Structure formats: structure tokens, C-alpha cells
Length: 317
Image (cartoon, rainbow, N blue to C red; front, side):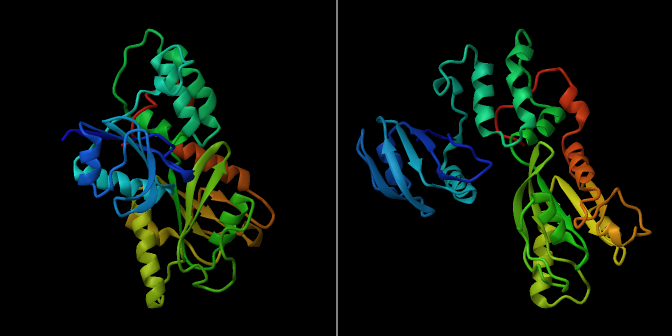
């Protein structure tokens, strides 16, 4: 059986309900094969969705169904993974069906991307794409395109460092609200804390990890292992220390990752070890500079200023 699927709702952030389109030669047979109780054409029913979630299945024709689970990012990804394991291949839907007002395919793609983009830096760049692509030959995505894709799909920033150097206070200051437990006690943050942050126009997924120390208890050691696994997938590492403890010992472990070394609590004194930015969450010193530095490391200004067309559609690598 030939089958394809396409995720029609934004994939980078959670929502109330997601919509996954599945096309197959025989949608009824496909549902039975997937373990979904069949739904008649023109009907919609609550069904178990591949053992992942309870949601709505709507059947629009003999070959088209929509699966509508809860819109959590992990739920959608797991359903997509199971569909691929079943044999369906990913297919990008034609955005002109959703944006009939668009005069060209590029304009429809831009409107679809704007609906998904989390970063305000993306808006003007996407709106200008129809003009840039007019008469330009279509091409495969290159390194510049993949970096700019971070304007649509928020990149991952992971903060690492010793305990009790102000990492949790730092993320709270960047977020402008309390998102992480703060205390002057090593081991306070025993699990990672994730939050979406707007870094001067660029939205990122920021993960604050537990402090790493040699004498950690078993539960903290497991948390540190998870933190390093996250760091290995990060687009940018934030190595954090203060005048009492340096983060440089972590650098050899993750030497191939892009990174920014930050000295916190600079109101208590500047540390002697090399750092890129010194900040004080208490006084606000250096916070704007840190946000701008992280933004520019993730999406360099010269790439934003490049006037050439951008391959912004399709799935990121």
C-alpha cells in the first residue's frame, strides 16, 4: 500500500490540537492496518491513535484521513515516527491549497512559514522572499539556509556549569519571569528546565541543566548524564561560571559545539578565567549584550543581511 503523511499544523511549538494528514490508496484498509477502528467517508470519530493518544479521526474521501491528536510536540513526533515505521513517507503539502490568495508558490510557502515562525526576525525576511525568488532558479538548501531555518524552528541552547554559579537566576533574568528554582545550595536544580526565550528577536529553546560537581549524589549524576546528552544535541552551549568557579573544565568534553562562555555575578567581581560576556542578573549589567551575543552566534548578522533568496521550506536537516 502506498501511503504518505504530512503534519499540517506547526511542529516547533505545542498547540491544543494537531492535524496530521494521511493519504493512502485505501484509507479504510490503512486504518485497519494501523489499528485504528475505521471511520466512514464524511464522518469523524474519537479513536485510539496508534497507541500514542486518544484523538479525532476525520475521513474526507476514500483515500484521505486526518488524525487529530493533542498538539504536544512529543505526541506529534511519536505519531509521525510510528507512521513511518508502518511504511508511510513524509510528504510536504502544497501550501497554495491553504493560501489561495497567494499569487505564486513561493508566496504561499512564505505565508505558511510566517504562520510557523516563532522569531520576529523572520517576518521581514520571509515577506521579501517572493521578490527575491522572482526569476531565480530553485536550488537545494545549503549551510546558510539551514542556519536561517532557526528563525522558524527555534534552536536549542543548553546551559552548563558548576553548581551555585547563578545559572537558574540567569535564565530567570533572560525570561523576565521565574522558570527555575533558585537557591544557594548545590544540587537545587536536579533536572533540566526548558523554556522558550526571546533573545533580541530570536526565539530559542533554552535548557538550564543541573550543576555538575565531582561529589554528586547518584540522582544528580544521572541528571548530569542527561544534561550532557542534551548538550550533544545543542545548537549552542552556554558555559556558565562565576568568580568562585570556572566552567572551562567542561570545554574539552564538548569542544566541537558552538559555545559562549559567560561569567555571572560580575557585581561581586570579575573572574580571572577567560569569558565572552560578564553579566549580573541582579543589576542587569550585561544582560542585553548577552542576549545579542547569543542571537548573533546562532544567526550571524551577515546571513540576515545577505540579499540572496532563502530556501526556507521543507523539513530542516
